[in-house]
Each structure stands twice: as C-alpha cells, then as structure tokens.
Length: 310
Image (cartoon, rainbow, N blue to C red; front, top):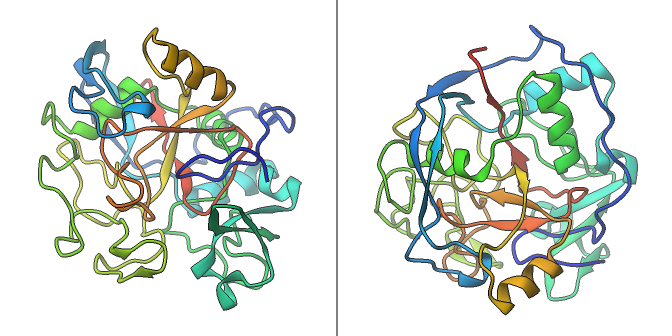
C-alpha cells in the first residue's frame, strides 16, 4: 500500500492529481476567526520526545499579526466550498480512503489493510461526506472535515482567501501566549484518567478506547476549552496540514537520510484522536509528522489562517 508514516497512512505517492486552481469566492465561506498577535515566536523544543521527527532545538522567529479560524475547518464549511465550486477531493477521484478499523462494521473484516498497521483499512467510497464509506452515516456539519489531502486543503484555503499556516505560525498560535509549554493549556499531561483537556485515545491502543474524554472519533471543532488566543483543539482531534514540506532540521547524516526518505512529504501538526503516549506521543505542540500531499484518512484535516482581517 506504499510508504507508511507512524501516525498517518500514506498512498505512497506524491505526484499527480494536483488540485485545480479555484478563484476565491469572498463572502461565501463561513468564517469564525480570532486575531493572533505576532511577535517573537517559539518553534520546536529543547526537550524532544521523538528525536527522529526533528522536534528540536527550540528556536525563535519573528511573526506578524494574523487571523486564525477558531477550529479546524468543519464539514459545514467544506460543504459550502463544494457547493460553490463543484470541487471533487482526491479521495473522491481515487475512489477510496483510509478508515480506522473500529469505525467500520465488523471492524472492517474483509477490507484491505496495511501490514504492521492493520487498524487502517482501505475503504472504497470513503471521502469527506461519507467518512466511513457509502454504508456509513453522512458527515455531521459540526465535525472537522476529514479525508482531505494537502491538495484539497490548499484548494479550500485559496477559495476562502486564506492559506495554510507555516510551522512557526502554527506553534505560536498553539502556545496561546504561554511561552515554552508542551500543550496549548500549559504543562499538565493528559492521561487516561485526566481526560477533559483534549480528544486523544484513552486505554490500550489500538484495541480499547474507553472514550473517557467523551469521544472515540473526531469531536466537533469547537468543543474542549480554547487556549489563550481562543483557538480550540490545536492538539488532538485531527492532524492539521501546514503549508510547508516535512523537513528535519540539521546537517547530520541521520537528518539527511530522513529528509531524503521524506522528500515530497508535507508537514502535519497537532496529532489526533488516535494518539496515545504509549503509541504516538504527538499531541504536543512541538510534535510533527509528514505525509504525501495526496494522502487522505479519517483523522486528518486542516485549519485556515488569514493575513488580514476577514
């Protein structure tokens, strides 16, 4: 099934199916924004947990003021985009996408899986409007849109007269003015018992999610307390595509080898509802991963940023 990232299943190719350019359609997109002040931003960490991902070191960059969507792009927002433009996502054009096994009847028995990551199943007909396939329920408007590729996210952002954020911008916004903290709310580590902070996995991955946080799938985009800038779920819930390639900083041989292997991949931030410290400790601000720009799955979405007030 192609190259596989630890957290995000990949189609294993990075060419073809380029998203068409779409003219912006101001006034149609349901914006729900807050201002995020610029200044000196912190990026990365001097306390990396997954060194191979290039989480460190901590560096500083100067940023300008931006406007951010309070939550990840919702199904309702994406539905407006599709209605206005007739856009068809990569998953629709390919005819399939990756769905987590426990969200399927009979745990997806009989569907194609990924060796070593059998919890991801290739489901024909799965896409943004039918996230578990043609036999499943329609996507709910308040949920984050998923099964969207980087190409799809860029197409939406162009239509909305916005863009995807850069990594420094994303981390600055996620910190919410708290400085060098691992989570948008501060230093408190979420756990299977302390589950009110974020939508991640509780229990033993991948066989038992207790749903102690209230969810065993993506949660509505504006639940859980916002951070200091008024942004909801900057970690957990769904991975968010960014504007940049996935590159490990540094000139070491290991960094060069990783960058060669990840050539063509795009950077994702934030982790998802499937993250657990025992398996994928990437629901931290400095955490990061990469995937090919045509890859789609049931735990990947995006958020739009604007260079001027909407």
